[in-house]
Length: 569
Image 1 (cartoon, helix red, strand yellow):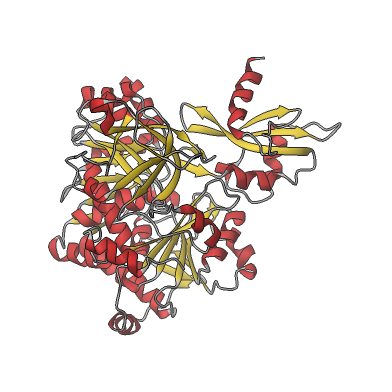
Image 2: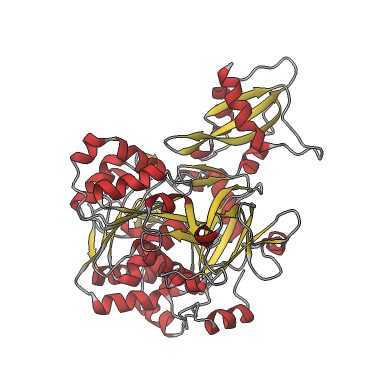
């Protein structure tokens, strides 16, 4: 388990980085102050996703359902620090499950609906989850089938709960309503002293390593993240926010759920991303703030007929990131609709830079620059910026960079910075520098001289991740999986640019003598390994040999150029 050290806790409290409150305290405060106001709304297509009617819950009703979920978990005997793994779509139950864990002192471990046996086996086992929560069905598939095959391989996993398919919000076990004893819950809460430094979540991220990494975060971490994201969207009490990102990482939990809770706003869920439903919700739910990938915002802006049919008068701002923003897109939304696009750089590890219209009113600047939070002598209107420290470091010499135009690794510290990966001591030893800054692996540069020296400009990712539709995929993990393909001598995954998704998953292969292979053949072979569909290759590059450096390592950054060169032949 990774928990903040006493020294880190003392530092964050002394610098007023942390509030010292728990997520459950925020919920109870919201219930007291906004009891009968609508708080949480299902996606309109809930029935086709998981069954049952669309739910619209007041703060009081949210609180009551949190107690019901918590009563089930307490009756099962789950104690503080136990892990509840959850594979749920963006329905109201996902939020309620998260809040029930916060009430009981459990650790919520959310998993993507796209994950199959390969991913579930590793993540549930690594987290040592004692219970698993999912839906009985998702669309037309049985969501419990993959887990049923794995039960014997997961000795720590004792309980499997499912969401009922009826109109009521209910938890089921073995086809019957799960037992809940409110006396047990009251006794459990009476002897539970929640600590804001207790872990609340384990989210999962992919990088250059061959396996996903668990990112544990405490109540203090999430509340600090919510503070930052409330500023990004300028979320206010009684605002309506639309959450189109799955509740599995910082973009959704920190970017949507925490501002909703902290500002006592109204959270509207959306799943899976469907442009027609998204626009319908923006209009009918009178959404004030949402998040969307750059490709979606670009597509919409080019579809004048579609936008002309949609009332966007309530929409004030949209957060976007995971890929560079086009200046014309940011300018177009501001000029035509009065909507400010906020440029966000972030990660599960808790790094955050953001450009808002308040500090960068010029949309062209906002698209390409980030404020140098924490730089000496640089001030911003953002209150949260005063809690962030950043530095650029030359990755070869470890020298700090203070001049313009010289790329370096962004290193960052602040109240949202995590304390280390779950059960990964070797990775943790290299994750932070000698000053306690997180090594992001992302390259930035100081944007220029004079006024431009106030800004960073994103240069690129030194970590070899593929960002497909906002999801970060580890090519190293996929390399390992495809190595056993009988027709391949060697293979390496990489991303190729795509207007819609940001990047598509591609694989470069060198064949064994006398062999031939097609993309369909590789996809079929990987499907049999129970791989998430999002990770399956969509492009194929056949080479005589993979490009390698003097140490024999695949030069992955050369593969996109080789792919496009092959397409031109």
